[in-house]
Length: 174
Length: 174
DNA sequence: AAACAAACAGACAGACTTGTCTGTTTGTTT
DNA sequence: AAACAAACAGACAAGTCTGTCTGTTTGTTT
Image (cartoon, rainbow over all chains, first blue to last red; front, side):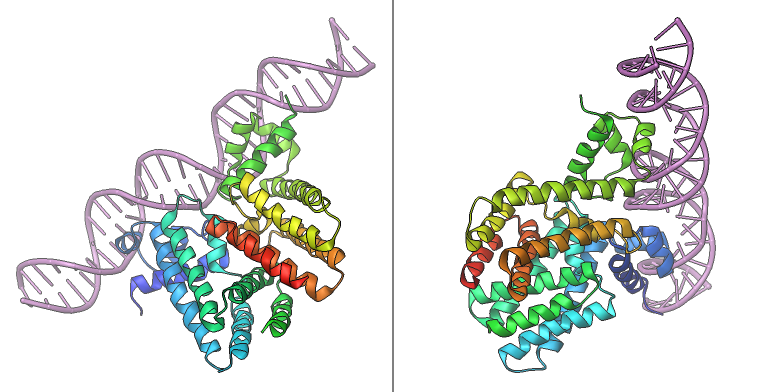
């Protein structure tokens, strides 16, 4: 059996994604992770600190999966297509729950800056990814914006329709 | 003094936008609206029903303000520009709090379908707005996607940068 | 075997949540 | 003036929340 810390992280990751941050309590996390409350607070000072840890782990996981998709191809165009296919893939394995970072952004206040800065870093890194792939600043921002709304709109409509639409748009842009 | 129902709606509207849905309790709403709890439950069966009422009122307000901006010009291009200027305007008067509909989407579960369907209707109406303005399905979806992420990204970065960026992109598209 | 750290169980504080209920006061209509 | 509806105040139920605390058990290291 994995360590308490791992069990907490795995359970929190699942529940934060499935139920959202505010609707998931510490008690549910520790009970489903089979961890004592005292053990939880030995590893994390607060729920917000767990949130930061979750988002950092999520950032690592999400980007490494994105890279797996992107690196399947060599031409810029195909690599960008792959990025959009990655959204479809994530939608399917996670049941159209959208972007964990943007979801949590909607749940917190502007005073929770530790959380906020991890979210900002994640999105800045994504922007940088498109800049590296595409060079041009205008074009990369353009595709970043399409990418972002593709994720959000799939969540709202439970559908990949606008991801596909974005791919067609990108096809005419590059 | 306005009616209890109006006071509830005004207070809820402010608090849901400023604090989010789940972090705003009935008790805070009635206390700040100077309304008795029994009066609240005479007008609204539940908090979720208040949420639906809030979103419907928000939909009316938001679209009528959008139309004020759009109708300032006659050419399609200028009208679309005006729509993006409307985002800037809303960002400024509401301190970059993003889209109420998408924020609440992130807070609720997929079982809260009454709320969910008001959100979907709002976004479908926005898509239809761009379709009517632009005719072409591909182009209108394209601009809808840029419009959506412009709102979300301003919220995240507390900035109109990507709204301006979108305007430049739109300038090259139409 | 003694000592140590880590994890355990679970009570507890204090505050919050939504929603119900009783009973009182106010204002309008007849 | 009597009758009515609407709003009032606020206690209450039954549950949730985060975080602290005490004390016990387990497993490893010395």
